[in-house]
Image 1 (tube, rainbow, N blue to C red):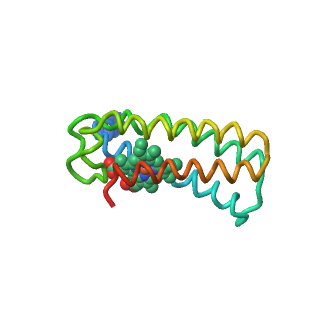
Image 2: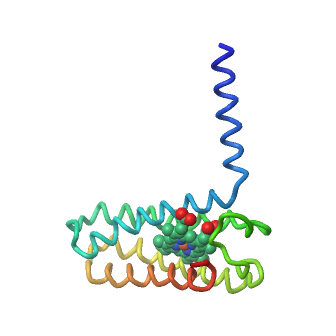
Length: 142
Ligand code: HEC
């Protein structure tokens, strides 16, 4: 019993340490971005067969992911092992704009994915990727 208590206490503390670190939280979300976008890219390119349902599910996941990272950029979280540039905090309006563009693009991709029109999907997928790149160019260290 005591052992179990200690084990759950350790887990709880580990969870808190993780929760207290916004840098690893946002990097965690971006890793999911990579997996999701990677799977979509393969279908769009034809490396894996296009599957309307599967693609629509991924598009929906991406739209959910697009809501998440931004809450993990509190002021002062530009120190340590992070690719975040200080411009995130010194140019908040520009930062918000690239976030909004990105959210709009993923929302549209989610809609287009429902149609199964692969040409339109390809186009909107490319547009969405552009919004990742646009943000990385100005706000992420290489
Ligand atoms: C509004 C800005 C913005 C948008 C949009 C954005 N990113 Fe990023 N991304 C960042 C920043 C800032 C970092 C650095 C985070 C850090 O290290 O603290 C990052 C980091 C990453 C990383 C590295 C995570 C790691 O392991 O350190 C990947 C992969 C990534 N982004 C993929 C994507 C993909 C794919 C998209 C589009 C679907 C995207 N990002 C959209 C700002 C953005």
